[in-house]
Image 1: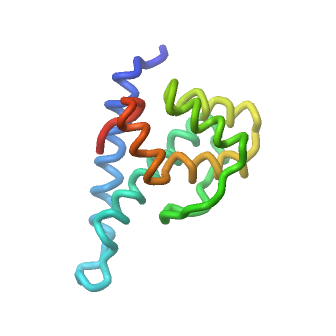
Image 2: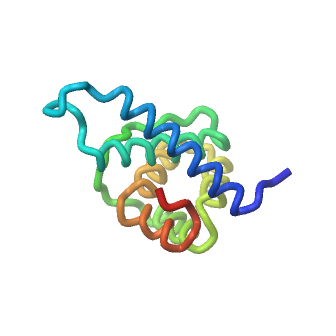
Amino acid sequence: MELSKEQQVANLKEKYDRELQAIQQEAPASPETAPAPDTQEHQAVSRVTEGMIQEQVPGFKASSHAPVSTEISPEVQEMVTNSLMKGPYESIQAIQKSNDLALADELHQALTSNENWHMLVKEGKIPEL
C-alpha cells in the first residue's frame, strides 16, 4: 500500500526527529567542540534523505553528511526541479531505475543543500523541521 503525501511527510518528520536526537546525543559534552546546531540539523536532514534513497537503492551510502556546495549536473538539476514540483520520491525512484550510485549521491547532496531543502519545505513536499 502506497502512503499518502501527508503520511510520507509525517514519517519523514518522525525520522528527522529521531536522527537529530541521536546526533545531539553523540555530540561532545564540551560546548567548544560540539558541532553548531545548524550543522546537526543538516546532518539529520542528510541522514533522513540517505534513508529515503536507500529504500529504493539499498546499496546507496552518502559520501558525506557535512554541508557541501557543489555544481550539479543538468540531469540532477532536472530531478531537483521535479522534486520541487512533485516531491522527492519520484526523483528517488528515477535513481533506482538508473542504478547509478554516483548519481544518487549527487541527488542526495543537491536535495540536502539549504536552498533546495527550504524550497521543498516551502512547497510542502517535505515537513518543516
